[in-house]
Image (cartoon, rainbow, N blue to C red):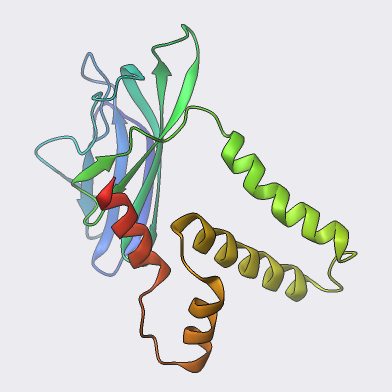
Length: 184
C-alpha cells in the first residue's frame, strides 16, 4: 500500500479495518481499508473524512479509532486555521466506520476534559483513595456513568437501578450518546 501514514487498525469478526492518513494527495484525507488477513487490503472508494470544518486547514492526520457499543469514535489531528503552526484535535462519530459525522462543536481545547477528570481526582481526595485496584476501577466506572448521565441530562440513579435490576428498559448510554450526536 502506498501513501499510508499513521494507521489505526481494529480487529473485527471478519478481519481488520484500517483508517489512515493518505499523504499521496495534496490535502491529506483519512480513508478506510478492509482486510480479511491483515496483509491484503481493499481500499474504500472515497475517504471517510476530509477537510470540511472551518477550524481544519489543509491536512488531516493521526486518526485514532475505537469501537464502543457498535459506534466508531475517531479522534484526529489537523492544523488549526486560527493559529498558524498549531495543531488541534477533532472528533468524529460513525455507525459503520465509513460514513463519518464530524462534530464542529467539539472545542479546540481540552479544558472540558480536564474539568471532567477533576471530578475523579476530588472524589479520590475526599474518600482518601481506594484500597485496591478493583476499587479504583469501580470508582472510575461509577464516576464515568454519573458524569456522562449528567452531561446527557439523564438520571444516573435511574440508569443504574435499571441496569442492576436487569430490566434494561430506558436505553443504553451508547444509545443516548448516539441520539445526542444525531440531534446536534
